[in-house]
Length: 86
Image (cartoon, rainbow, N blue to C red; front, side, top):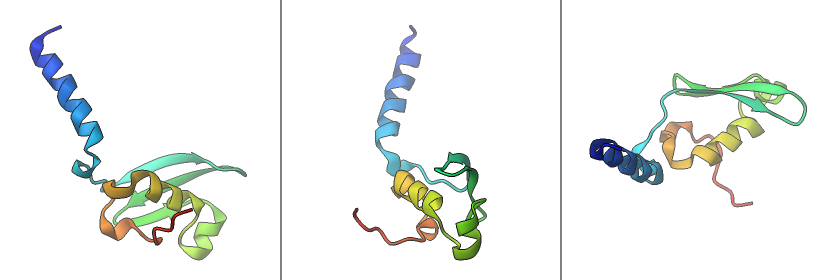
């Protein structure tokens, strides 16, 4: 393997551990919920989810789960729920 590729692999490993380097501006995922599959998105500075609960409350378990998973990789404006330890 070429030494330049080895260097890139090492850099990628370091970047993967330094998640504060990453900030999502847009994101779209398919979320397999307990009752159905949903499309959950962060777009134009706002969360969206195709589940019924989100359409009423403007947040849901799917968006809150993604907030926890992505944590410091989301812009501050994306954090719509308080960080509560389980």
